[in-house]
Length: 164
Image (cartoon, rainbow, N blue to C red):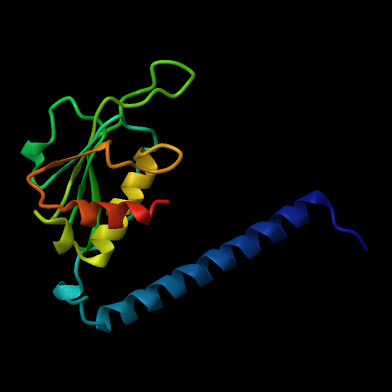
């Protein structure tokens, strides 16, 4: 026995209406249960979302303890916050042509005024930035310019060894 198009459409509409009613009931029951739960604690900390770093080669990377230490013409500029969170302060310049050109200057604002004071997450994020902006072999000592950040030659070499 075969059914025509009309009964099939009516059957489909009926099943859809039943499915919608069941879903509405599930949402209502779940909403009531959620009302019984206490609100999340305020001390859970901020939600950190990874930022997609601009990738390119910078002729000069200025590492500063404050935003004022980064030249006004530097682009891109990122700020590494406590715990390694990254915030883009100035976007990367748009490409001038089909081939990538090095940025004249890029900037990184560090959360500490000493390279040795960076915690492991902050140091890892700094390495990620230097790897993305240093060219094929990562950043070199000649590319890095420190403004208001205490860093000995030995500390800089130890940092850059992680990029090679």
